[in-house]
Image (cartoon, rainbow, N blue to C red):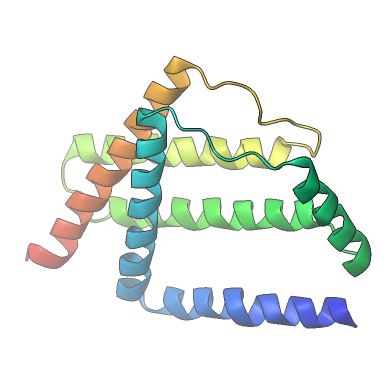
Length: 167
């Protein structure tokens, strides 16, 4: 019975607001652009200064395993589902932004960012539980991510200008 209440809570707190926001394209654009811009700035800052994401220690892993056994729900698959939904929403957002971009180079930049998010989506779907994210990030990967984050911010800026300020 706890599982049904948890799924109902997830539906009430996550899925219904996403559907409500999606019904109004301006609200979807504003909220998603703010979230994506903040995420890009955070990722830009982390890649520029070489800050890696925090690792989970052994106590946290044991706690998550205990919670999984108590509620009989695979939290890894739930997290992977949320990552998939996030990637799909971001891909839809960049496709939406592409309609407001008038220059060819901006549309090409948008295609580049969409291709990055599609590859991220495929990587997340193929990733297994045993994959370790403790590996060191190479300089080329950091430069690539800097370029993706700058491109995302440029796309958001120009599409916002064209959507709201240019008649």
